[in-house]
Length: 76
Image 1 (cartoon, rainbow, N blue to C red):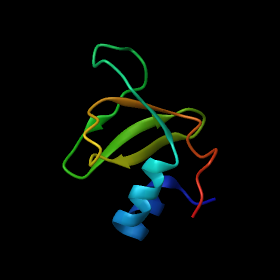
Image 2 (tube, rainbow, N blue to C red):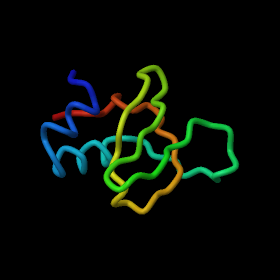
Image 3 (tube, helix red, strand yellow):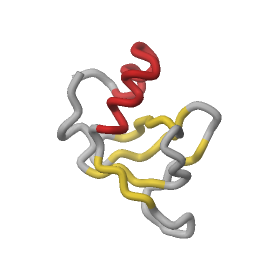
């Protein structure tokens, strides 16, 4: 299974869309002390449980979120 960041960079928007669709994304309040994403112009960097840092596009309009079971259903 390829690295999430690498997958997004290599495969562009479609891979980014698939990545987001295949993850359990839970919106969180910005005051929460869970692993939160920081919004950038292109991607959100998140702490993925058990896998370190990963990325997901901001197109969903989610500013702060936590990924759970991230890679469990991820497929290319």
